[in-house]
Length: 174
Image (cartoon, rainbow, N blue to C red; front, side, top):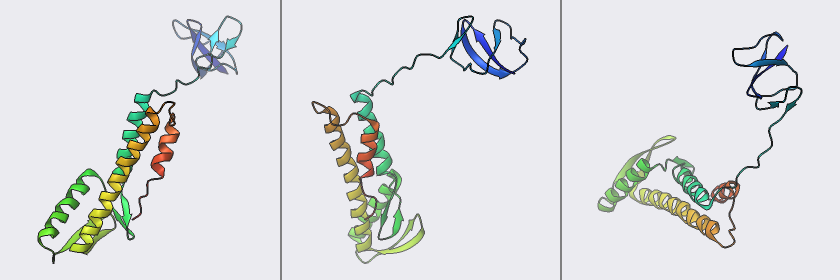
């Protein structure tokens, strides 16, 4: 039998137990309708009132936009069919390779992509760095645009879904 465990007039648990089972400090009521959180007035169970969610504040949305930008920025891109990591460490490594080929324009670089090692010329390293830099800047530009929408009067961006949609539009293919 389904049994509601009630403490201080509130259902704190619903279990399968004999109808006469009651833990210390609680009462048990046989019921197929009771749910955790319901109140018990001695005769009937009443569900708690539905509280509408609190809309996010502008500060909440700005923080969400920063988080969405970071996730998109560091989530990787595809350059001429090669998956390229764009986490902060990979950005730094690419910056080092870019600086290296600036001084050694005939060098070839063994670059480890998410698909394995590829050999890249100086020109290809520069192109890769340009693609990653373009992507990173697109992410920051999108965050700036989103923040303008959040702070506009009246705001044009008021939901997490609008922020997610804005960052979904940032390309990851170059």
